[in-house]
Length: 162
Image (cartoon, rainbow, N blue to C red):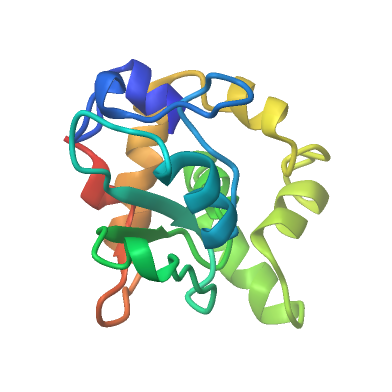
């Protein structure tokens, strides 16, 4: 997301993003709604806060404490895993489909490690280097949107692109 934010490729700008209090980065790696609320929503902000989450599970719940329940929370999904974008960027969707039919419980990250040779695909520093070109990431997101069937009320990252 930070690559796209820096490239002005998202529907919001860096100035509209609440930075992580520990790192100053534009992404906040907090899964707990209570912890998020305690850390960020107790502060005063100039504008209404909108929570945008990127995750790979439809089942993960994020229920803000009662005092903040009127705050908009939007979830954008990359299921089964965000590593599927790497498969698409590499032009390996056909190979992934074949692999996933043969391997029970196959995950895109496993495919990336065993077939594509990306042993560190789950590491954030690896992803930062891999996705340093925002056009590559944009194209992978567009392809994911084209081939992926979203469920009712499910949104993918395409909704965040300009």
